[in-house]
Image 1 (cartoon, rainbow, N blue to C red):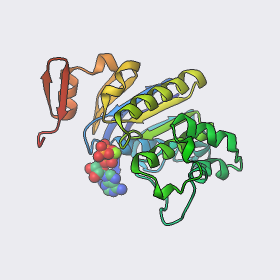
Image 2 (cartoon, helix red, strand yellow; image 1 turned 180 degrees about the horizontal axis):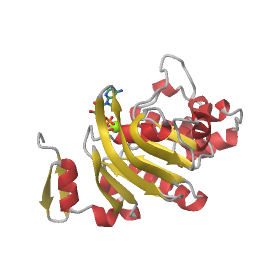
Image 3 (spheres, protein in one colour; image 1 turned 30 degrees about the horizontal axis):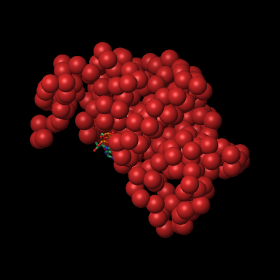
Length: 245
Ligand SMILES: Nc1ncnc2c1ncn2[C@@H]1O[C@H](COP(=O)(O)OP(=O)(O)OP(=O)(O)O)[C@@H](O)[C@H]1O
Ligand SMILES: [Mg+2]
């Protein structure tokens, strides 16, 4: 189970997420959505102990991430919004994916291959990572987040550079992993349409939690307008945006 209780956090003197209270029962499949700057990435970083909270408490499977970073790194996998891979070093795809296993001293080629198959990038395993297209790089980084046997996987916009067919396929695979292996997922995403089929737990964030609950209960004009500032309703579709468009 993960819990955030009245958590506020930010950078310097600036608070960017405020009074966040949420608890998710493992294994969960949850999506965080909200406008740019809402604090979605910050929320993941607080769960990892990378950003220190200013008030409130956090428990990730009974562990306070600020206190026991080592345990958190073992049980939680994280794909940041921007890659931290140094593109000047000519690493092969399979080496990039194997990194989390190497850190734990558990290098295993079959796990690397399995993770690459999940994201549909197995045929690139020997290619140089920095020479791949943006979308393929992102698939490889997603494989890297899936490779270790994590109990909780935090993904910060994992589908942002991936084509629409790939988005649907990958999202359905993540959901299958959740169901078959009992892995918990917390996924930051902007494209809510890809989630609809799976009715995930949705957290709508805009500095504070605007609403949370099953996707089908939360994707309503009232909540979306509150999170995004404005929405445009058409027949069978909703356009979300901030006031500047
Ligand atoms: N390292 C940092 N130092 C200072 N301010 C930061 C830092 N990281 C984020 N912020 C600020 O915190 C606020 C929330 O940022 P965050 O990255 O959590 O938003 P987000 O919801 O993930 O946005 P996006 O959809 O653009 O990724 C923003 O105003 C941002 O400028
Ligand atoms: Mg972000």
